[in-house]
Length: 178
Length: 415
Image (cartoon, rainbow over all chains, first blue to last red; front, side, top):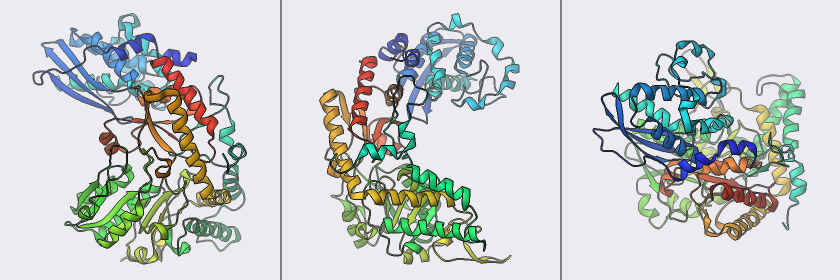
């Protein structure tokens, strides 16, 4: 294996791919059901969020995708299950930062604090977004835990969309709650 | 490899003699994605460079020498491309477009608007590329006609048993000559015969077929043939639509602007003659010069020999991969090399095509992973995407061995 590939296919990623956590469905309603697509490869995810008050009580994922999209979804589900929505938002921001070529690269809707995750085009870097205060809310890497295993994905720009598929779908789902 | 000297052919292609870009320890690039776009021989690159360095001027306008020479080259390309597919009137029946997509959109927008009524039917197939589905869906949403689809068998053949009934009410049949996913070579003669009996015209999508097999429009019998330069050793940016003069003559213009008019007043315009009537704006001139050279290169080798080479490649590929991976490797589409081209979609166990292509890339092997612009076919196959390798005149058995070695690495990582 070349060093590059080792960065991508870490053991922990392959573990989540082979044994994905929190798979399945939740009854919707009451759970929020959100479908996400990666138009590049046709991968598809259905995310179920069971939110009570400001806590994500349960999460289930039904995904057809590659090792990166599946492991990212699996790790995300473990990271956010049982957490406060505010904390989940911080996870989202931290993951966004990690997936950005520049630390604070954000793409999409600049007016929304829940803009889409970084696109796979490094040419779309917009450094002005450093100033919008989002970055300050992000967690330290240590709190991202296992998710930092996905850091190697940024070396493979085409695969960033695989890693962010579940997260973009999560953003969409949370927007539905308002 | 009885017929072609592939190692000598490979040397004609500068891109193929370099190592894998940025990859340590990858001795050479193994290019197995010619179904997406083919590589260019040096003669094509040089012809375009020479044109830009010595002859570049706009066509059909200037009276000065280089403008006349540019026009002569552009029209010579039209003639040679027409002869390449045995067009009866090559000077008048070859329309240069941007790509196959534009060629089919031209037919849908121009012929379709003039000929399709709400009660009509357009018959396509489940294995079409989006380029031969969406243009018809756009027109159907405006006119209200029905689109019907021929189904395919599990091993990737069109089901034609019921064709006569399926043709009821059909005004146009749009079928690929070779599937860009399955490799299936369709029995177009049978379709054409029955379609014409039913009073329908036939559009053949030749994107994958024309670069790889001898093509004769008279023999195929279709009414429209769309193909593209960049899959037949030429540059990107130039596509071709062939149709006989009587059909083209009756079609209204597609895009409006310069080049395509006989006269313009403030009240209206008169279109010029075919084929220029369909070539609004400055055309892809350097690209036509490159395509002309690509056609010369292909003719020089001989399309029959290219087809023979690819049959050998397909048989070797199936045999080699089956021996190494057994049932862990499955290939979509026809197994008989006589019924298919050198593009094949495959799966290794349940490893996702993206992962597969990524690992192969680390070995300098270029294959395609994705839905190949054929999402309805993906749904029919019950997958979201496939891995796809495709061969051309510059591929040899060593490339297939390299593919096998790369798949061995996939096995190491994913088990």
